[in-house]
Length: 497
Image (tube, rainbow, N blue to C red):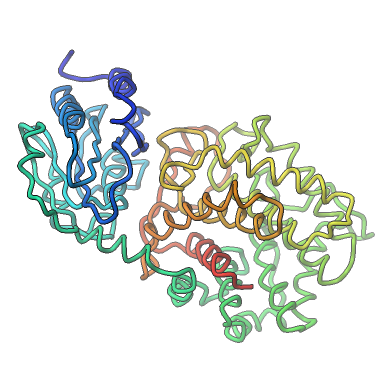
């Protein structure tokens, strides 16, 4: 074998491993040239067992990749769980830790390794080979992906004996301690933590602050949300985009909770944009821009206004709008393209229809002629999405593209839609409850108590190519959109209404 192993050679080597040795695998990320970086493990650990991560191929050499694979295969029975990333840098790209630039558009291998290791929080990392590009020092001395440090060492001659030499007791890393703390939080605790950070201004009437404001009402903070919304009673907000239309869900929620007709008038002003001056339905709601986002931006406000007013025309318009959008963006395989510009099944481009239909159906009368078709569309989408949930419970930045990063906001939105489906009897709990719980566990690990989030896709208009979606920056830090969607997910998990 040459000194530089190929992506296909590594995939073949992994596929040839005996199945008991390869019980679980993850897509860590994509290299700059599109190769999938993989991690493997013999299986789930015993409760409380430490985790040791082996990393090879940082310099793209076959030697360290083979060393890691050999040590992995010969590891036998150990008092710890073993995970291996045999070929961490298949393109021999420049590496730097902690990573710099926009993830994962720049330095994708460095960002993928750094964030994946942080979220999976091993207790010890062993790096094979002569060069580690500063990874062991950075893991040991920095908060990895904002979570915590992880002891790491470089082992130039890694083999099974290196594992034999490890101490019988490996203490938990700071990262593991933090991830376990995060996962112990209840949905109510998460909701209250995030509500202290998100949903405290309404300077722009869009869904971005709006979802957090709706969640805050669910946890009993309606009076404060009303204070933020009150100025719009006197001066109605302009509606210049679909984001503004969706932002009016806040007024619909306030109208239902307070009975204030002025908030209902504001909600109606958004829903009425689906009609011309004579009161006739338009072909679709305005500002859809041919993007799948429009399921969420328009469907829920129409259905909620219909329920609050008792006027059937709003349900009729919601059904017409969704039928119009379906012809533009629903792919034959059941996923949604973000727009007709490309077939790419962008993560939020699927999460918007998922959550949008769930919210629309929640207010839609079952007696309406369109209800069965809307429900069938929702069920078909949920069934298709279920096939693409990854080993951690996440959905990827491009749903059906292996190795694209696990995206946080879409995971929260899709899981919320599934949970709403279970609660309303539209989905079978036996098929979907475990998926919701896996998503919740994954979201917990990626959500800090200070509102820091790991891997929320930046704001995204329709893009011309698959590569453009793969290159969207993944935010590590606070994000209004992601925070609001996770807040809604948390309140849904807590059973708050």
